[in-house]
Image (cartoon, rainbow, N blue to C red; front, side):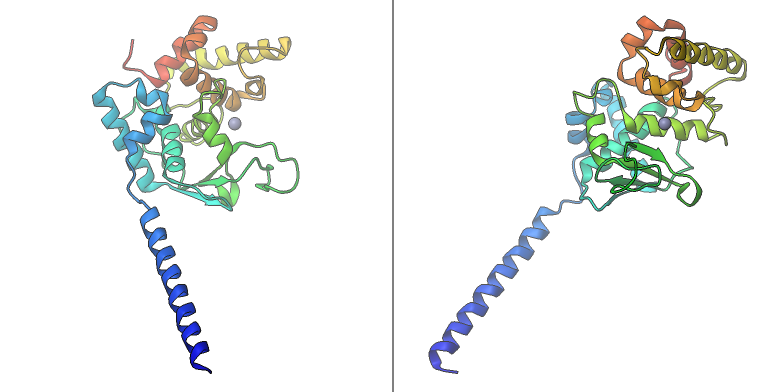
Length: 259
Ligand SMILES: [Zn+2]
């Protein structure tokens, strides 16, 4: 090696070391494990923004608690704390009136890069599923498409909230049966009127093939409960106006303390 080549090698090595060190530094400083939950909630979650200051603090604590026992993980897609906080928000909104409620039927929420098939495939088959509560080996998992998670909390989602929909299924499932009758939210005498109300509405939807309620809700009682829960939390005024009886029953279920 000539002296010139030696000097060039040293310079190249020093430059490489410098860039390597710098990129490591950038990686370390870009990672912020503790984000300001309140800021993310304020920017994205209207339910949170409509709460009193005291209840906002409670909501934040419950979001953090949810994330302490449920892992949110991206599958072939990068996710960040906003994604985690939005999943937790969709979980907490429907059971916010129940301070002791913890989801004991889920351990993990998987975020997929897009829509997926019923066989959890993002590349093959009929990929039109936005969210799903897993069964069989996946029974403690929920799968959500990340774009659908984000659009559930954006301004242009037209009252659809896939996250609330899927957690409504878990609330329904908590009593052992996903049947549209969330027994933990319904006091006994209310069960029969609830079932007959949902059957009347489903029949009406099927007959007309048109409704302000998402027609997917007419699939069966369980889907009706999930779809109407989205409607209740996303467009309460419209629901109250168009289906006062249904609204009153849902209010009794989800916010039993409010009159
Ligand atoms: Zn569903």
